[in-house]
Image 1: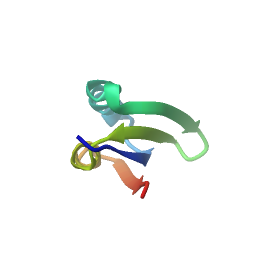
Image 2: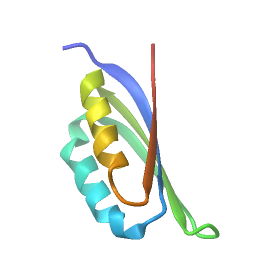
Image 3: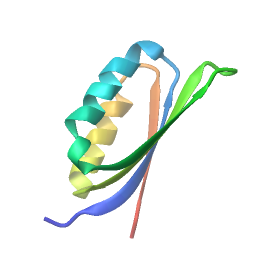
Length: 80
């Protein structure tokens, strides 16, 4: 199965969604290359970057699940 490298940028504005977000990321941990989280206290948000190596369909599915969480925005950039 062919995989692609992608980076997900996630902004969490609703802290109540953090636990479910972490559950989703844990579920797909085998595809995660690295993760960086930055709390931005002045704006009361969290900024998370996730690097993945997975089939494109799976990356899109993960992004969709995360994007459906209340108060969470996600954008994904794929390698060529």
